[in-house]
Length: 357
Image (cartoon, rainbow, N blue to C red; front, side):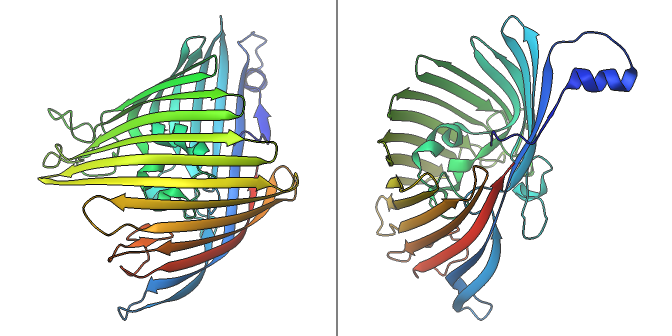
């Protein structure tokens, strides 16, 4: 988030350390973060006896993934800046690292920003994450959002290069990774096999007054030499319109996936709204539906969220979600095939607190 707790002047710090009066370009580093945790109840969770039951648990990152990070900038003159971000994800309830134990698993990149756009290198969010998140009223919350239907909507890519430029309400972006997940054996930058783990995408956004729309394409290859020809292509378009106290959202994502000789085509649609009753109180409602072509396994989920701001940085929330499965589909509130008995519906609710710094 953009909230700032500490701003450190690097030239001043350097002067204190080495007692040298030399002049430097203006630089800064900002510490920021979000701490989000709540008490959750979910039914139809698989048990060791091959049945299902209700679980009550403490859950981290419900509206926003808990995180802390550093954001830095150095003015190089002539409108050019050096920038970096190091962002750590963690679980409040256990104190453990997120993103499979990575130190800076949410983001870790460095780059240059100027009048002709921004170029960054490192571990970065894919363009679906960057550009489509604003069209989900739940902002891709960890469980209660569109990512329950498709986790790649919040995908990140190791070894990636990204370019973004903005002008006259238009944003253009492109990204390329030659190994999007370095934690998978053989899944990143395999010598002689440039297709392994490759991900690339492009997107465009237009915002004018209350209207906002974006189109994004993303493609991923398999993460081993044997699966390098496996391909997942995603095309997504999202739009929003803001009235004085009401925001309307709609989006569509097409998935075309090839694994060996098998092909899957699936559409994901969602439609939602956020109503601001007072400056402190807002309520969001969304319906998400996945349509898998050629099957009846087409799950739907419904989400309702109440969010009350105690201050600009601290809010209390209550989220509820109902996942409705059909013909043996296995959508749970945590995602496809996650903490759900196939074919059963699932109801979940969480009450929590979120603080930004």
